[in-house]
Amino acid sequence: MIGNRYEYDMMAKCERQLWWYRCLHELTLNHIKANTSNNNPRILDAGCGTGGLLLYLQQQGFSNLTGFDLSADAVEYATAATGIDIKQHDIRKLNELYAPESFDIIVSHDIVCLLQEGDDALAVKQLLSVLKPGGKLIMNFPAFKAFNGSHDIAVGIQRRYTKKSLRGLMKDAAVIRQTIYWPFFLSPPIFMIRNLQRIFTAFKKHEAVLSDVKMPGKAVNSVLHTVTTLENRILSVKPWGSSLFVVLGRKIAPL
Image 1 (spheres, rainbow, N blue to C red):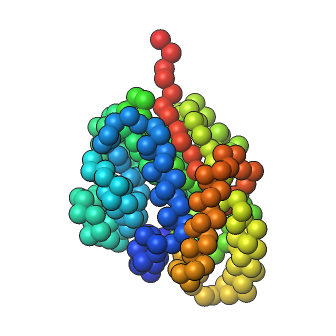
Image 2: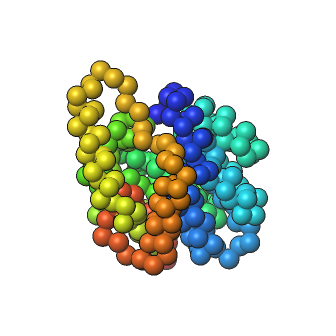
């Protein structure tokens, strides 16, 4: 996705209103509130994209915020949207940008999935190294190969995760506090759409592949948001979904 201005343009247009982003931001806010007693925790958005989450957190009263992204396009958008001095940086080299144990909360949504195998584990270790003891690392991952589609190709997703593969990724680096597959009720239509995307992509090998980030009609968007918000409120355990939301803590070394 780096260098693909079109995808960042679409993200910037959709990130404040599209049901999927809204639900992800609401999930994130709920878990930030649940995992800190600090009224204004120091929060890092690691791979902040066009700044939608940072802007949302600002609107919820948080002010001790910072972020970075590897993409110059993302940094430009996020800085303009939030007024925060967003840095252009590599998630695999966080120790060059931040001191150890700097943040109460770190959020990193759908970023390590863009890295080569091995680099995803390195990125997680880097994130944990700048997290304060007792702090929380909140992440979202694309889930299950069955939901692979044109979006994965367009934005450069290298792999999708399950709870099992997540445990393999974390190994002894982190304590997994919570895992949530989502959306559940919308999984069947998402699965069918992604299968059709794979078929169409196979017949259009020489055409540019675009992600499926786009705004549906207002009424449809509202229904999708309502359905997913409701399931996230009433279902604490779901067997599958196209995304995997995770809350992590640092391992405490034995005395």
